Figure 1: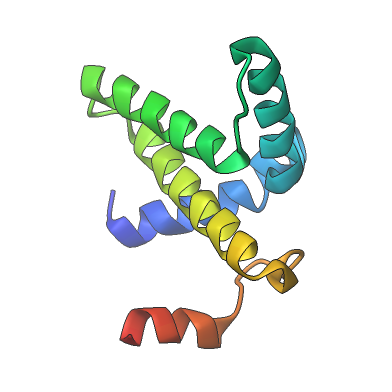
Figure 2: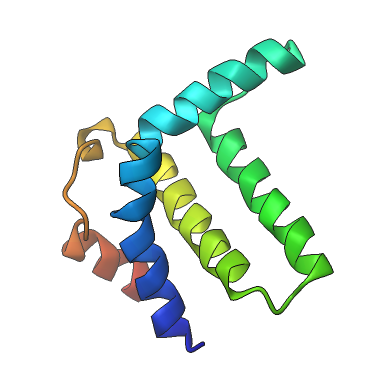
Length: 111
């Protein structure tokens, strides 16, 4: 699978099927963080949830590096982690439409 296809597939899933199934990522990851905090008896943040889910995908890919769905899921978790970080840094970004701020993307890419 080409990298552009991986990125586009992950984007379609996190803005479509996955969000329809699990709800908005900020709500879903907060819910998971709250439950893990109770189970683990320590505070867990939504960012830590994303990192742990990515680590889970990595562990599975170590067993089977040919699992394309695992690579797509890791790509999606990376995008969601970047979004969580951006919203934590600038809460005004919460609720942006899919696709985001092209000017911000250009600033990141071009330095």
